[in-house]
Length: 443
Image (cartoon, rainbow, N blue to C red; front, side):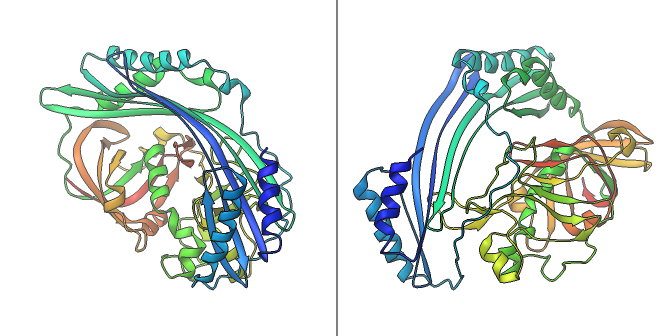
């Protein structure tokens, strides 16, 4: 697709640039939100853009457009060349025809694209209806949402590289508010898939409602140090919050607490963290990254030992290693690094077994303040939380909102057990429920 557009840009840039890379992104997205069985919002949008990265006299310049015609394509090449003159960054960019990935992950479903919009709307309506019917204490369903999208990307460079990829996805979530006397709590459930038949509105609604009602009538948590279990969703949230410490660019610039720690033990031996660009169940799965470099399964921490960082070709060249296939940029932006399917690997324990390992354990099922309460450079965090007190292996009662604080690396060192209930969140971060030996709790 878009072959004539690429040919036009390459032909014009041939004698003007030393090297050029073209990145095209196109796609559409749909979402519907229901309130009182009426459509509160209905959105459908198309997007398309093309960006170039040029090398001229060892300087790099970028430009992009969302207007597709020959004159505009020439203009962005000229603009990128002009921008390169003012580049102060001394990063060396060498484009290549990178090898193709031998794995070809399945990331597109024709069946999903054929689902009728009427069925999508009805699903969202059912999600709200079942949530309201789930428990008499439910008084509001602020979110009953279905959404899906399709994306196409193509990247090519003047060294002969030419790759394209088509993906789609669908997700839904429901937020349920319940109340008993003056106490009000919210619970949420979500699902992401490429198979519309997997969506079960009744099951999702009932799970969301139960998460809400279970939190009602909480008691004050006594301030102190506790063994803590983050459920799988909240452990994925914690992992995502501190994902930047594995970014090689941050490490090289001295903005990561992992600088200088390759080969060192930084976590309990039970902990293995990977970034898997080829995960069969991931929703950031692709055969190549935004440089066209093949993606892979990168082990970052193995049995507690720091093994690697996430690289694009520029940071890899600086460190004398190969790229991990985590080069990231949109057609509007410059090259950076991002995670793909970012995972802390599952353990062998059943989740219930985690709560038997200490007399008193606090289970955390909700976290707030990730942006303001977590410092990705120091690793320190102090976050609003909701959850439950467990005693002698049994859940005693819910807790009023409390604060959990600690340090991310110390937390990884304090891992005692990992469950087998692995789950991805909607941003391709995945984890199981994990028992931490000690964290600070303030009621």
